[in-house]
Amino acid sequence: MKLSQYFLALLCPIILLSSCKKNTDEVAADTRSTFSIEFENQVNGSPLVLNTTTYKNAKGEDFKINVFKYYVSNIKLSKADGTTYLLPESYFLIDASKTESTNITLKDVPTGDYTKIEYTIGVDYARNFAGAQTGALDPINGMFWTWNSGYIFVKLEGTSPQSTATGNTITFHIGGVIDPNNTIRTFTTEINAANPLRVRTDGKPNMHFKVNAAALFTGKTDVSFAALNMTMGGANSVIVANNYANGLFRLDHIHN
Amino acid sequence: MLFLSIALMYACSKNEDEVTPEEKKITFSVPVNFPAPVYNFEDNKLSNAGFALGKKLFYEARLSADKSVSCGSCHQQFAAFTQLDHKVSHGVNNCQGKRNTPPLFNLAWQKAFFWDGGVKNIETSPLNAITDACEMGTDIQTIVAFLKNTAPYPDLFKQAYGSTEINSQLILKSITQFTAVLVSGNSKYDKVMRKESAVSFTSAELAGYNLFKEKCTSCHAEPFFTDFSYRSNGLDLVSTDEGRSHITGVASDLGKFRVPTLRNIEYTSPYMHDGRFYSLDEVLEHYNSGVKASVNLDVQLKNGIPLNTTEKVQIKAFLKTLTDNEFIKNTLYSES
Image 1 (cartoon, rainbow over the protein chains, first blue to last red):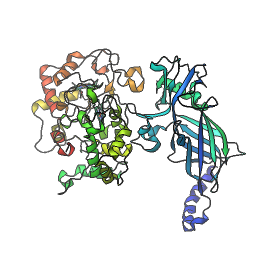
Image 2: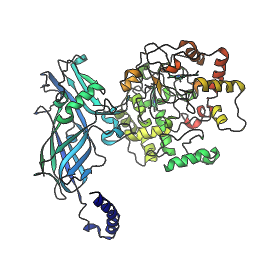
Image 3: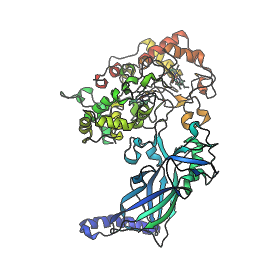
Image 4: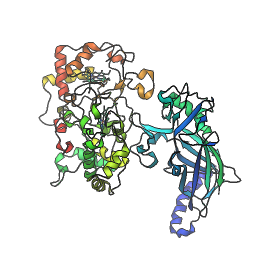
């Protein structure tokens, strides 16, 4: 294993050198193409309808959702042979109030069959402290804390009759990257090898994820809105992040 | 990296070289008695047009909700870019903020911003003021829309960035071209340290410097006169402002604030995070007799810092050598 790696390392520059001489259209190995991911926002299996529909949390308390937004970043694909591809600059903000944001397109992906996908729910450590950002990370999106640098990874706002806050509001702004209150969570899911994500030059596959907003409130710790109705970072945000780490996303199917 | 070495080269060379007859080239100069900066313009290439735009935005009161408050209203050049005579910041609709406005200079050497260190990058540090209901009381969408529709901004963005595109990133980067260039390193103290000809301390200043090194530099470390740590200097038994613990959530950080720089201290009154002291005499008397046994009081201050009348006079004489009039009066930084 070790030896062959060294051998490869030696070989690499040779390959690169020789590939320079070759005609470009002969290099079929590194063709790239596009795929998309659709995030279908739900609450316990029902479609997420903002502002009007009443849902129940695991404690049986009623609630409505007015805002539901979250970051998906650093998307990484793996093949069955263990090779991986990290999509550079992959930062996406999914906003339940903006339909176009729930279907994201990933370009320039090396063609091949992928059997695993993983991504960060939120934003990696470095970008939380970086300079002014643009695109999905633009502070204009209302997902950046201005008094304590860093991004809100998952934002859910709404109301619940059980909430003791003024106006019965529930406010869950989950973020923070410093231990012990680090809320960066990575989601990983295997893809059925019989129907892998087939990235091809002649096809644009679509992955379909179901996203359960109620996962914030159950999984490890059932949240009662009477006791917890507001968190903006800190220990309570960790409780919520631990809840949604595994329950927020579920790969439903792939259209190849 | 390349830029940094250029900047460093500039810093070592004499000032005259930077001046061209037509237009002064904006440079970021590192004084020779300063270490390497944290912010080095690597991802924000400094240009005259970028600086000019940043400065215009800094002094643009129409960015605020009631069009009355600019960055420059709270950060005034004649007060080394703090707000003179205001205990706490004074924003839109006559709203009083929670904390004393810090001065703005040598920010390129800071790793964290605000009294509690909550903000981690100079580029994002104006965001709080822009959105705080008590400061400028607006939001970025409104500012972007205003700039897109207001001459000469689209042209200025074009000159600075090659396109009339206006977004928050370009706004913040250009403001940073202004704020990060604000370097104060030409006080009498600096000239003495750099052994510049014909500059030396008076005997009172020198005595004050020696006292300062004995009693104050463990926190107010040279050359920035802060070690950038968070500490309690015993202002209150129980601090009403959580300070550092608001960010860390750690009880042992309650009531701790960033050790402030003492450069230009002659002009930055009132003092402390809540602006409670109006004069340096009050500050020195605090260290002499007023230090309270707060839970997180810094151990070095558990007996205060006894200072007699002569010592106070000498320390004050030294503190005034930290005034940098070239910086305060530099028209390059003034509203034009």
